[in-house]
Image: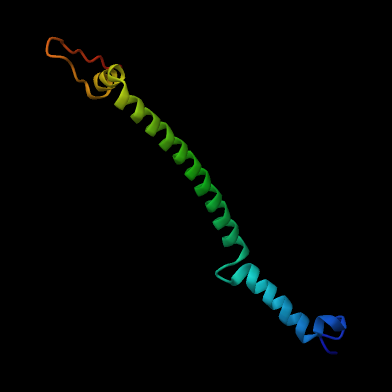
Amino acid sequence: MKPFTKLPRFIKNFYFLFGLFFVVWMFFVDSNDFVSQYKLNRKLQNLKNQKTYYLDKKGDVLKKKEELSTNTELLEKFARENYLMKKRSEDLYVVVDK
């Protein structure tokens, strides 16, 4: 008894077998397979989201820079809070929370 006699005729066709092999190869074996394309697409979306986040942050920083360059009171406040600067006649106390 032959082992392939019960299979339908179109399954034994060369073009069907080659097409099936090609689809399996492209989906699972190739370096650009379906899983890696999905991961790359997710990574691309994540990077696009990061790009918009950092562009928004950049706009905020540029706006703060413009405010600091025009407003001297705000510049003095910024220098006191971030760089612990003081006037000559002042004493500076730093309180550290535990």
